Every structure is written in C-alpha cells, then in structure tokens.
Amino acid sequence: MTWADAFDIFIRIAILMAVIIAFSRVFGLRSFSKLSGFDFAVTVALGSVLANGITALDKSLWVPILAIAALFVWQMVVAPIRTRWTWFENTLDNRPLVVVENGEILEANLHQADMTRADLWAKLRDANVGGLAQVQAAVVETTGVFTVLHGHDRISPELLEDVRR
Image (cartoon, rainbow, N blue to C red; front, side):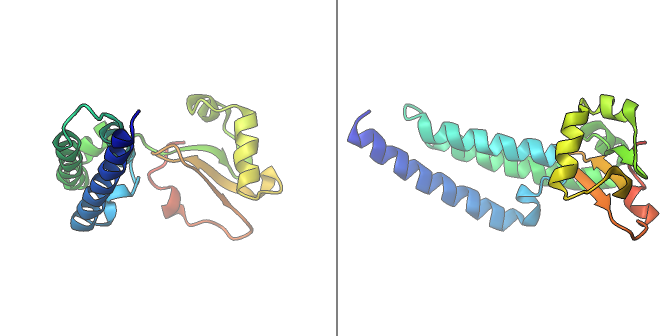
C-alpha cells in the first residue's frame, strides 16, 4: 500500500460517509431504525457497501454511491408496503417470540429461537434480572434483539399482542 492509496481511502471515507449522512437526512429516521428484520438487513447491507466502497480502490466510487442510494430507496419503497399489507410484512419479517412468560421458561420456544439456557441466563443478567420469578416476559424480537419485561407492575396485554407464544 502506498501513501496515495492511504489518501484515497481517507477521501473515499469522507465522500461515502457524507453520502450516507445526506441520504439518512433526506429519507428520515427510519434509515437506520432496525425496527424490523428487513430494516436490519438494509443496515447490514449499507455497512457492507460502505466497507467495500472504501477498500475497493480499483473500483469507481460511483458504484458504492449508487448502491447506497439504491438501498435507501429500496427501504423507503418497501416500508410503506409493509404497513399497508400484512401478508407482505409477514413475508419479510419474523414475528417476535416469547421465551419466558410469567417466570416460566417456554422450552419449545427457547429451542425454536436457537437459544440455550446459558444464552437466556446471560440475557437476563444483562437486563438486571435478579430471579426468573421477576420476568413477566422475555421476547426475542424480529431483529434478534432480546427484550425483558420485568418488575412488580403488571404489563399491558397490548405489549405482547403480536408476539408468538
């Protein structure tokens, strides 16, 4: 690698980051939301395109710029379709899955989520849970994020309305 290559990498970083920031400002808050599995996939793809665009010094800078633009447009086209047609949303996204409910581990769901008990204990510790009895619900969300609802207050049924049991 030469000094010219290093300089080219810094220029590419500056340009591609400016492009991503500009697109995220134009397309709004959903750009990196990771609200759904689809959003998560777009975010990962953007990272991959950015990394490739920075390091592929033999390729034109227009290739990653066009790919970034296409991913932002694709996300903004698909997002309203997901909200309008449930079947489309169900095709693109996983539904959240309860793995603990009212202090009881749902073994079949834990297995379906490809989680071990060790994984569960780690996630509960991370959520500052002192005991399994405190857990009203532990959910693997559509993006793979683990959510724990715990405490003394009863949770609202609406929070688990669309969650698989």
